[in-house]
Length: 199
Image 1 (cartoon, rainbow, N blue to C red):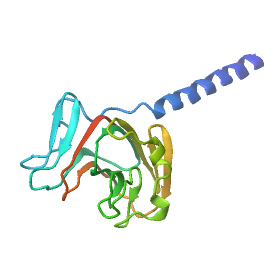
Image 2 (spheres, rainbow, N blue to C red):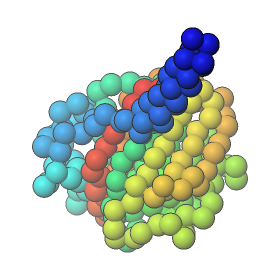
Image 3 (cartoon, one colour):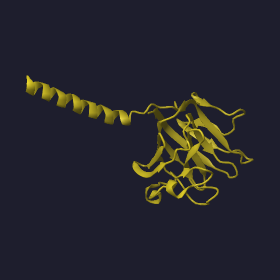
């Protein structure tokens, strides 16, 4: 009986570990691939559309920018999406209130690619700059970006590799997930398989 109980505990604990590992990547979709249901569409929307299952963000002739926010707000959260662009674009994934941004593409202020770095406190603190992105980034192809916020810790992965972990208590409030089209330049960015899960 004693051995049976020990064996049962071992089996149950292994099942719990496997389930936790599986749950880590069990992220529900927040983009249906058909339309902008679940998102707050800007009035007189000229910037966001869905084409062949892909969310396309493109600024207008006046080079005005736009933000697309999820209907739902999140505090501790993991967001994962595939993103594609070419040339000089400036986009990002926004979390929390006040907003912290996981940069996608070229920073307008620094004039260099800062993908997966965090824009915080109106700039890119040294501790919030991603490392090794140049070796992982596939320009003109789909890139998998994962951005996680847990308490005061913010983490980013690019194509399966962790590129940044940053701790900052200045961004505590829950908020919708935001996607950005930066004003001031002609740009197009595409998103697909957008997923998010509250932690």
